Length: 319
Image (cartoon, rainbow, N blue to C red; front, top):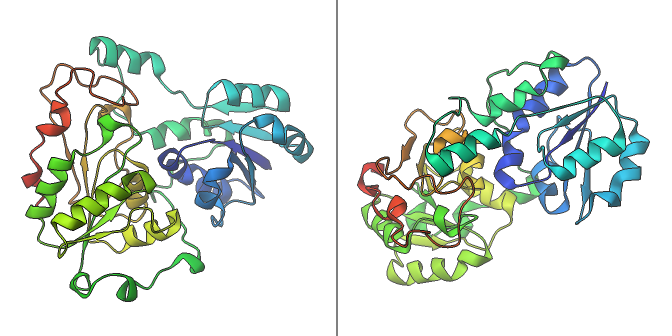
């Protein structure tokens, strides 16, 4: 059976589809698993042994419509469920199923704080989309496969003080209201009993350098210096991961790490909390704020101007 799984973006969401990919491959007789995603996310899937072929596009799904039609899929599993994936399903004209994004219930929670969301992780909601294929969750968690060429020599790269163990501290976030404020980052560094590898991309590099200037003996700025697979390698060998609601949080879940996640404008009730992490993991949040959640995604500044959802988190409980 030839199956196409749709998930266009982003890092965390794609990592969260890996249990469905694995279980479809293992539980469907003679399954041939294809994935369609944006080209910038190819490295997330290219080394997955449960995938037969990854189809990518730059900007427009029309770039690969004919390529996908020629594959003559037996079934399409839509784990993105937006207008673009609807268009693709229409063009392929094959039997399909889609996962429920629960957007109305999320809207009710954000706008009126009416809680109608089920207490279920998005991974398990993804599995609802493959029930008709008689595929079940095997309970083994998320997958992340690092190619040999992206394994890095930690003893050569990291300072000697890091050789007895380190924590990973994620600086980034897709929106400002998901990011850990600089003041909180400084508090975390001061409280940590281990040196910290600062994780992020090019947009976090300057902040990483600033923190390194303040704490030169306690931090290593890995922001923008490693590709995603190499960053995942640093995550894999960290003793503890401290992060906001980010894609690296889900990569850490794939390695069953101890994760301390700080939640700003988003909430775990949306179903995107760490999936099957180490039992010591903990969610840190300010539960009493009437303005939270203010968005299912995030903002480039706090709508209220105070950013209490992050600024009032007690980071001492991480340690």
